[in-house]
Length: 627
Image (cartoon, rainbow, N blue to C red):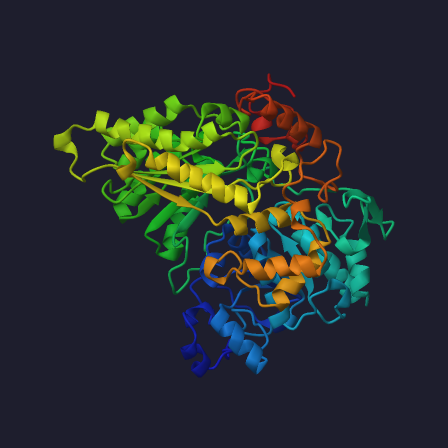
């Protein structure tokens, strides 16, 4: 198939990394457009290097293209240099594979991975010459569908989407595309298709609902504008993750991307139940992939890509029950092929350190601990399931094994946090440095002193977590907490061994607004986009002053969404979605947090979260532990 590039050589030479826009990478799929029935363009609304690192898109790309009648292509946000040229010359946004305009596709699927990409969604629609508002689209415009973690509260961006897919993409897309083809054959309208689609499990059509508000701005209820629309949307979930689609021939880019390696997803979900963690609730119950299937995938992917590194992907790799067997296999196979193994999400214990010693070049590696809070009291509030003894014991083992660099991750602004908890961050960092000097004799300190890199992010309450009722700190409170942390570190005996980093407070505040926001925020997002806000997750592109002026012009108080504590019976914008975990369970966990009570993990004791109804996974590993 002869392809004509959408951009001339002259334009490609003017932009940074032209390989972002030319397609034709190894394992990308080309099809004869005349022999297919549905064209689907998959979008990650950030630059190519980040979008190409996203496993979800690779899975869906592989699945769609396995169907003979469907051609799935990809598109990413053009960086600011090309964005400017495309606007000046009226070049429509194009898909990488065919280099044809996105507006010619049947579907545009947008992955919603984080809240700070919302203005980039509008950039994609605008450059593609698709009306921003779903209600203004014609019969010839693509159906715009969103999916991913942020679709669990789609309300702030609901106006811009025709549909949302709630849950895991492997289950309902075939039915959705079949419905589309039936509607097309029958000469049905866009509206006819949306009415048929909204009845499918996991599919949400926002145009068929309207929020009704109380005088104080909270939600009174939701009105259905189409009688056939369901009252609640239950998430879609794949229960047998061993027998499903997996991209054993992933697309290999020409340029280095953020995660430039083969990714092996070993399980979905997490047994831990940290109360701040949204992913830990959304992906319940834990479902493990069969170890023999994973061995096969690993070999096939390495063969099909030529990568020299493989990474295990999961929320908590240490909890995968066949990890020992899988790692023994990988170490043996990778050593033969001179391939590195990357092991994120491991708990730092003797087993993990032994494995890391085998697979990493000790001199280059650093170890990561995520205590999240500076005191045991606060770690109990957030249900971290990690004691100071665990942390210091893990550090001692690491230092004995030759590691000299440790990264520590904490959160500031967690519910019930006190000054003592904040100062505990410096104290714990100091204790870890002290463990190094106690453990490693002077003559063996070949790399000089120990390096502790302590980083803090700011706590953002997320939907479908026990902390969805919590107030969030103001920008000023966050900055004061970071200052206190820095002061606490400076007061430590081993302060020269500790480096401190913290996140930007205003970006966190904005993320907090969108995370728990409602439909009123669409006007603010659109106004900010019109005023030039783009790539808001990139610090060099973020303009807090523009955002704040947009809130003011739209008559919306940002504090309503952040610093206000929620009443127990408040109706949330996302309450019509059923993620499998009940609101009653989350409220129980919120009350347990307030009383500093720890909940055991799913394997130790079932907490009755509601995920057992899906009929599999960790909930049924031990039949004696009933909900």
